[in-house]
Figure 1 (cartoon, rainbow, N blue to C red):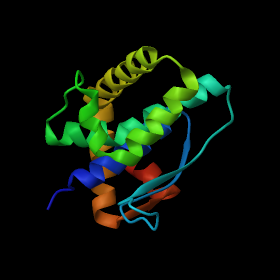
Figure 2: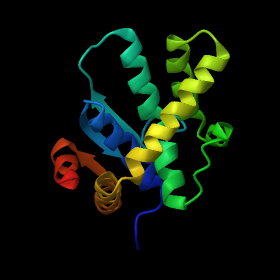
Figure 3: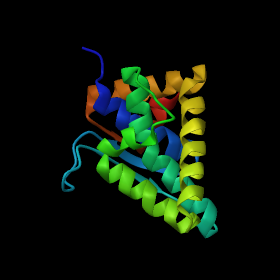
Figure 4: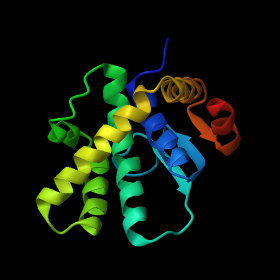
Length: 153
């Protein structure tokens, strides 16, 4: 049985965190956190507040976008469709609020990030990496740093 949308979702968070310069320590489909089906633990280098907020927003939105790519239902012009992933949406919104007080500016930035994520996942190299991470998650349920790195290559 191939990996399901949950594996793609968590793989999306992990891959984008990696591409944004984070060190993925663990990605799992099982979470002890309230109302979370999985989670991704990342160690970050400190940066200026604006780039940090943007990268955290991208990682938050990456899970839902990867899941939509898997399901073949990506609709970038309806960003509220992503609101069904409440925790991810709330995290992205909190990070975007750090960037922009203006609601319209936040929406423009959110849409730009969603477009970037779609391009990342649509590229053959990253789509293949996303699929390998999802496969590894499906097989192991939890990937430590070593298993994650193996899945990338």
